[in-house]
Image 1 (tube, rainbow, N blue to C red):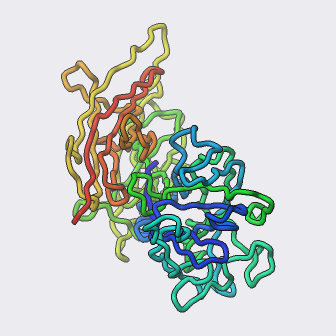
Image 2: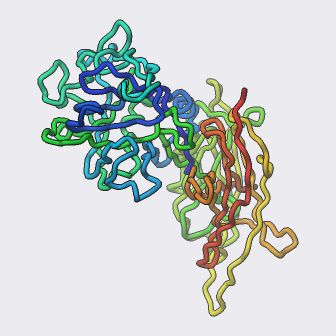
Image 3: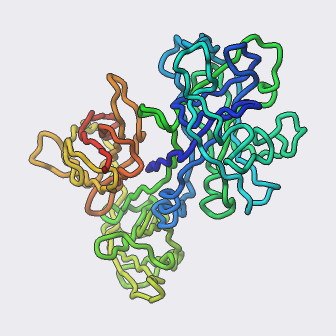
Length: 485
């Protein structure tokens, strides 16, 4: 399972009935309530758009495929500004704003003009900072009324409906007509946003949704219309202009795991075989997915294993799952023939590979003697220890796993994982959770894309499961991602 991050290319918080613009504020502040003379009355809504260009390219190039298991998820993540201390719960901010608890936020798509996909309501971020221009605070002049705001989306274009939609269902575009993408409940008010945008983004990638102008986040209408309160209730999230590591992002997780069983093919269980397609050392996609036929040692096709369809696991890598084989003698040799290989309109010759079928007892240990857990060591190729890497690179990192206290004894098959994180003081901020290493007949490796990572110092931990014991190896690799000037 790999991760791709897509970041916001604009965001703004618009304020009820006002021309306020806060596009450059490092904090997204959503509020509702009557407030008082110092703070705005009513409620606010966040609008944003996501730069999906790099995600689209990975999808088009089948780096993100989903063919083999359709396991692609897209989660919008925004970090709550009060998530770091429970002492902030149900208190006031330094500006005397009450922190909200027990509320729901909704994620919705910015509607088209007259519901016509050819008329998206494109908008500008603006240069504003504050909600209000407070005369009581000398020098508070970061207030802007330039679009976008509650009324305008661009200088000469207004929203079809002020505030984008009417929460009383009385306007040109009503709340009941909104496309609600997801709803999230906040029990304590310090939770991070984790909106599920899987169906929404997949529909954009496959062309079902066209020309989206972005999305919005707001309270449910019941809260926006709540009266009788004496304060305004707030929740804050870091915006794309934050100077911290917590920039909001769309996190795409997809399964590109390769587990090649060619050299460890066992009777009595399902096994996976792969075809790797390269051009000048780079992975390249074929015109169509190859077909696979398994033949015995005499060259006869095995019934039920003829012209099996393969799937694209990731760019240039084709996978087929062989169901459990029975009735074959141990250590016999079989072959896999890959046919229907086409590239740029030309048919290419079949590819024939061989593999040996081992008894399942080779991978099992059943008896009176237990196996002692092993300790491992790791060598990395593709990223050097303490290397400074430009955020324009995509690195293939080969991992050599060795049994410790041996003469560099390399291991043929282990269950190994890695995780990626950055550190802030003593806190580890997760970038990618535990992910299995890719395993081919010749190597273990991981792919690391620096292009969607925020410049920082990164760490990689390793984890190996052996004899029921889980051993974690901290900070086996450290490196920095730096900006290209």
